[in-house]
Amino acid sequence: MQDNIHKQTLAQIRLRYPFDLPTLAQQAGLGTHIVYHALLQKPITPQDAEKLLAALSRHTGLSLSSDLVDLVTWADYLCLWIIRASITDEEGHILDSYHLVYARNQKHAALVAHPWLIQHPQIAQFHFTPWPQGLHIKNSEIPGYPFGKQEKEELQ
Image (tube, rainbow, N blue to C red):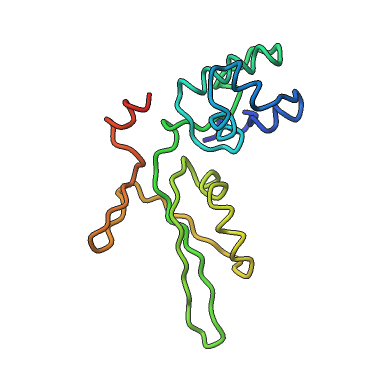
């Protein structure tokens, strides 16, 4: 996603134009948890993103849009990513650990998986693989996308 290079995150905007989360949430007509999710680059609905951008524009005096601000929406947050951490033990055996996240790209998958990644400081290399077809393990199924079309429409 090359177009995200010049976009600012909500956290970056907050550094330049400080705002109180509960106050901004109230001005946007949103719950504080929604603004907090946006601040942490977690997905929110496109409608909530528009409300947040409108309130943020009023607060900063800038004309902000989704072209300028990097907000993660459920529409962007579509693909299952498998993250594999491999390490070779003293006997030469390769030991793998796996973590699954839904993210829009590899950079975002690393951000979402950060708490898990820092639990493995001894591992120098992680492998990120998009897995949109979903994962089937015995009787369990993990969908490749967090919601089906109907569930997405119900969210919006």
